[in-house]
Image (cartoon, rainbow, N blue to C red; front, side):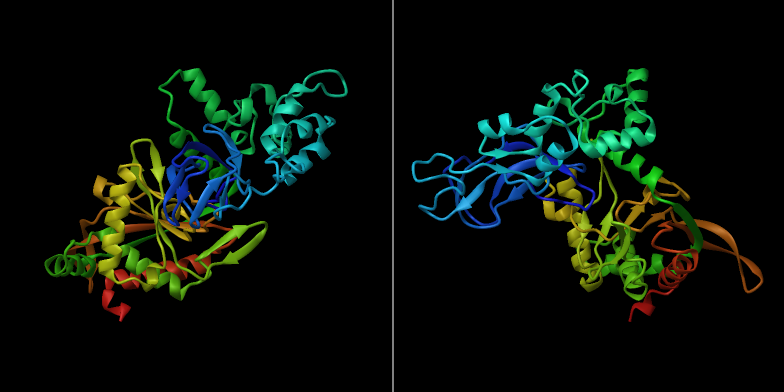
Length: 405
């Protein structure tokens, strides 16, 4: 099960696109999974024979767990003897941790399966009584710890794991799910539900602060007009902002960073995510190495991402490794807004519409096209001064794009 983001713990196997024993080519889609963001097709990392499938459609699978092998012709499935039967028992590290934290004995499970997975351990723990004789609610250790810290009763939480097991991602969103149940509103799709959980987690765990700046968009407006007459496909303001934001990030590397495992991690690549609304929720596909791309390539990449996002055809690579996000609501007539940081990133830029406003120019009132930028920052990674310096550089680039060269 691949990890499409640092915050992802599990993925749901939606469908196998190839069967056991079928030939696959490198880059060919072999399975469809549902992540916390969207449903994506996973491509084969190598050519060979798909074999030893050990995950079923509908399974919620921990990241990093083996679901199948790609074998050379004639190569046996790892873990099988010459007669095709299992020659040893393999227990995943996650299941071992479960065994250490719970009184249940996993040996009955080990006797039944070749590889004991985390889901198997949860199922067994849920079926076995605790020391006091009462049955434990199925939940991961992290979910139990989080529920204790928040004073929540596991029995009241809605689990999304195997057989309804409560996972860590279910705990922060307990109030959201309870409110949804009370109001008896229309049930959102999985993408929307998990989006709500991630936003809740970011809002409650990330120390946000905001910097706002109004900039003169006259030169940006003129640049777009010029490029639309010269380029096909024609660029949007978002395309220009990707180019300018990437340039500003290359000059302020401390903003192109993440908070991970209690440490600041600076990224070598500048990968700009674009917040996009789709029918089932919000996705953030990524323009990788945006600082190295020409404007024409950024336009083509952004149009391709928009098209496939609307069709539900984004790939795992499209969503992976974003280091900064832009959320532009200017096309909806929004003047200004504050966005929520997209973890584990450290900042997100909220962009309002370009509107004519009266501003002082050389002591005289004048009408100019103006726009408001709002930079939301994770204070664990970025302090006010660093955020302000980044925003100042971006404002200068917007007001004079020729500074790019």
